[in-house]
Length: 459
Image 1 (tube, rainbow, N blue to C red):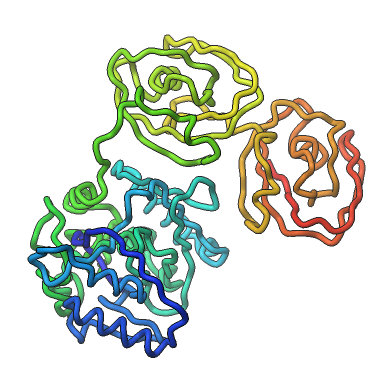
Image 2: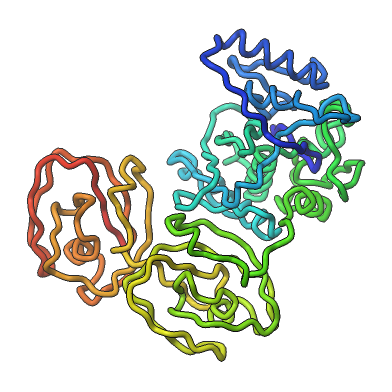
C-alpha cells in the first residue's frame, strides 16, 4: 500500500540535464536502462500506466534516473544517487487540492505530518499551503488507485506531487498520518528502511536493491530494520502511530539537520527584502544587545537577538531563533516586554518577525501588499492587518472587488471589519467581466467593466 520508505537515502549534487519532448515509450526505456545500470534489480521495476515505479510506490522521472548515474570520482559504490533536497531549499510548502481537503482524515493527517517534520528542527521547514515564501512546493492530491505514491527528488528539489489514495478514509487517523509522513519522506529522498527485505514489514517481500549500489546508509542510523521500527518501513500495520521513531529522527537529522548556524549579529536582513515569508535560523549569544524598532513586526535593521528577547522567543541567555522576512510597514510601535523597550518609527522598507514568539503575531499591514502581483494564483489566501480604514479610498465591485481596490476600505464595505480596523483574509480570485457598485456600511463602491484580477475578503 505504501511504496518507498526508509532511513536510507542518497546524497550528492544535482546535475542539470536537459531533455526535449522524448516519446513516452523511449523515455521509459531510458529510465529502466538507467535504473538497472544504477543497480536496481529488474524485478523491482514496474511500468504502470506508462510510468516507471520502483519499490512499489515511488515513481522515477527521466531526470531522476539520470542523476542516479552521476558518481563522484573514486566512488567505491557502483553508483551514488544525487536525489536529495539541495541547500537552497529552506521552506517546503505542502499544497492540498480541493479533493484532498474533502477527506477529513487526510486533511488532519497532513497537519500532523507537518508537525512531525518541523519538530525535528531540520534545515528546512514544512508549511501547509497556500502560503508565501516557498522555496519548494509539493502538491497533495488524491488518487482512486489502491495505493499512495510519489517521485524521487530531482535537481535538488523534492518532487512536486504526492498522490494519496482515497481508500485511506477507511483507516484510522494514525494510518493517514503515517502514510503522509512516509510519502513526504520519499519526496525528500528517503528509501524504505527495510528496502533489502520488505518482508520485515510486509506480508511478503523482496530485496529492492543491494545496499552497496541501491542506497547509502545514513550515518548514525541502524543497518538492520525491524518490525514497526520506522515510519519508513515498506508497509505500515494497524499499530502504526504515524510518529517518528528514534532511528527515524537520528537519520533525518543526520541527512538534513541544520549546518553550523550563523550568529545573528552577522546577519543582514535588509538583503532579503522582497522575499516575504522566507525563513532562516541563526544563534544569539548570551547578553546580546542592540536597538530595536517595532513590536511583533520589527524593522529589518533591528537587532535580531534583542527583538527575540522582546518577542519572548529566547531569554537573555541566548539561543537559536527562526526569523521570517516580512514587507515594510508604514509605522512601527515601540513597547516594553520581557525587560526590553523597543522604539517607535514611521515607514520602513523591510520587516521581520520571530517564529515561535510567545505573544500574538500581528500580520503585515494590507497596504504593504501589491495584490496585482498575485494574479493567476487563484485561491491563494493572504492574512493582513488594517490599522484603520479610510472610507473614502477607491474600491470597485461588491463581494468580488478589483485587485487594485483598497483592501481595508473594501473590507468595511464587505462587513468583514469596522472602520476602526482589524485583520482580514484576502483571497485571490480570477478576472471578472464586470463589477457592480453598491453602498454598504457607509462605503460606496464603484461599478466597472472587465478587469484582469479580483479579490474577495473574509474575517
